Amino acid sequence: MYWITHRYCIVFFACLLYGHGCGDEVLKHFAARLREHIRATDMAARIGGEEFAVLLEAASIEDAQVWAERFRQDVATTAVVCGEVSISYSASMGVAPLDVRLNSFEQVMQQADSALYQAKRQGRNQVVGAQVFQN
Image 1 (spheres, one colour):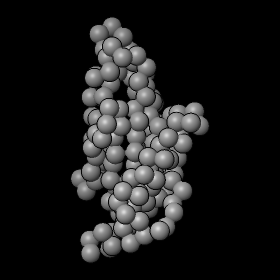
Image 2: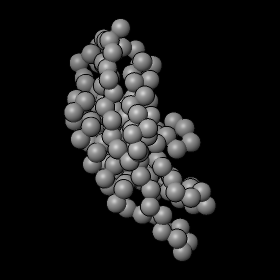
Image 3: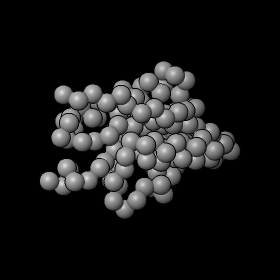
Image 4: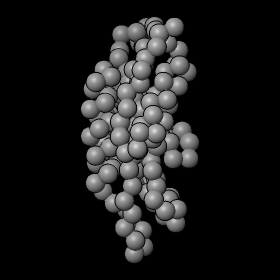
């Protein structure tokens, strides 16, 4: 019942690193920025090497895209200092609404992932909303 009465959106991220020497520092920085941007009711997780997912509670697809764009801009305008090097990086994001009445959780994750890869194909450092298909 909880899923039906609350709106959620999934946001997938790929943290785009420039250089590998300080990759762990960049990932830590990204995770710290992410923690500052999510609410207590949201959930964030690292789901792969440089990929993260965020579950935004009570968010429409439009709300989630606005949130993702603000976060993307924040990431793009901050740098990580690693030793004597300042590292700039960006993030591509895919956003999909989660409504288990229409699609399974796996389908929603695939939609967000497809939107993420579309953002990468379109030049990276951008937010793309998923084209939602109902079963």
